[in-house]
Length: 173
Ligand code: HEC
Image (cartoon, rainbow, N blue to C red; front, side, top):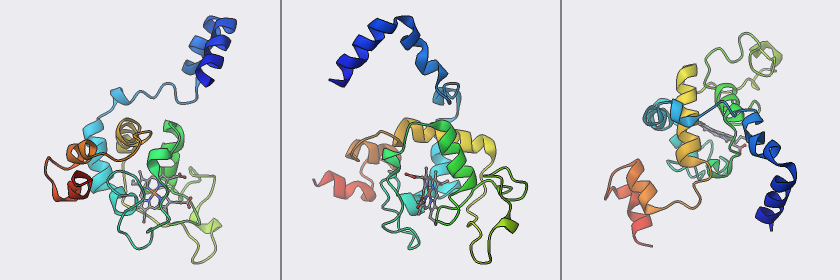
């Protein structure tokens, strides 16, 4: 139904609709322009996102601060700009840490600095990630995590290695 409506609308609007995606806010972000393998390394080891979000982004990380509350990144919108912001700035007042080490020093995040937070409410600082590596991480997430559907054995073995023990539960299904 949705596809039909889109087609009909596309026909009605002609080329205008076909070019519309190019005007999306992050249309100039093309994952292929970045180092996706490096992005995976950032997800796994440098930013340790795995600790809270799980290797596949399904929210099953082991960090006690996030068990049961880290959202499923696989269902996050396909939006590079928003991802970059959440990773760099974190989510103040939640357990999602910031990863741009200057996030709250000069107002670059939400126009706030650490002085704007009451004692004990300052955002948590995560592992520092350089801006270029945040882009690599975003490219990795858009390629391998967001919209990747239910976790599969193939995805697990691609993330770790074939036969890895972490993938055993998926193999026995
Ligand atoms: C200490 C645990 C922890 C770490 C480490 C962590 N996160 Fe999070 N993250 C969370 C929690 C908890 C939330 C939910 C915040 C909220 O309530 O809005 C979250 C939210 C997010 C969101 C928004 C999801 C949504 O649906 O709103 C994204 C995207 C995200 N994290 C990506 C990352 C990435 C990428 C990394 C690694 C650089 C990372 N996180 C590291 C705990 C963590």
